[in-house]
Image (cartoon, rainbow, N blue to C red; front, top):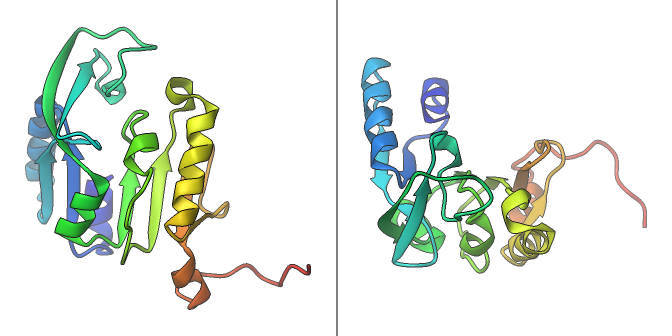
Length: 178
């Protein structure tokens, strides 16, 4: 995704947070091969803990902080970085998040000041439906709303309500009556 975004000219900077050192090395090689610059790679897990266990699987896209439900070959301990610390350090306007079930804890109580939208891939097969509902509640408390225009399946788009109300995002045609 970072290669595609960098090619659009949209973001000024891209920060990728990846816990698997092998994947970080692969990303660096891919960026170099495609002459992609301006992407910071942080070798860490998005987590509410200072250190996180990541279960490494043959299919690397399934690596994550949960031992179940898929078989894993080994576990590694990595630095944890909270969403709050990342927002504070990098001041993102867009967050794209696929953290294999950790999204439930990661977004439980966050300050998303300055963020225009957040796109999260949910993993309810790992977390269950209740935690997913709590994440929706937490995003609402943070001033974000589910936006069906840009959501599809397990990938959910949340728009910052202050940006939508200020006309910063395309609004729905017509109005709903109460």
